Amino acid sequence: MAMNNVSVLIKPSSSLCNIKCKYCFYIDEAKNRKIENNGIMTEKVMTAIIDKVFQNADKNVLFSFQGGEPTTAGIEYFNSFIDYVNNRNKKNININYSIQTNGILIDDKWCELFKKNNFLVGLSFDMIKDIHDKYRTDKMGNATYNKVLETKKLFDAFNIEYNILTVLTSELSKYPKDVYKKIKKTQYKIYSVYTMSL
Image (cartoon, rainbow, N blue to C red; front, side, top):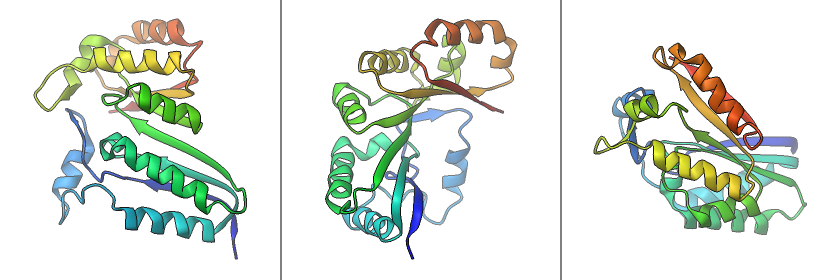
């Protein structure tokens, strides 16, 4: 018997990530697994997941993508995923997408995909430049704030619905007014801001 609503969390690139956040719990978790990284999801697995979803849904479906960093699976993976969903959606079920990203790989093509398919995007961004760049570095130790800020501006330009996910470290918690000013300054474009405490 079909269920009205189905929500699926998908990690298309397993634990693969293109940056190395100093507070990332997933790095340690992946190292403790028998297989640290299963690589990019194969087409066979992708289509099997989608087929199973449509066997069990008849009203609403939410496909949520996380990681690691899900965009490292490549834009073609997402194009193929969406094409297959559209092909299999014979009952005109309401389909929704969401993705959590660090924003590093985002360009116009990604934004076009997000906008066309009504993705709700979560952008990981610690708001205060010095603190963001201290904790969210690439694998060479380079700062990422400016790139994530560029991505945020792209989201604004494409009118993409997005949230900002900020990790509230003990250090960041010392600057509540600065964080609030940043949020207020850009509030007309950001749909909501979430914090995670460490």
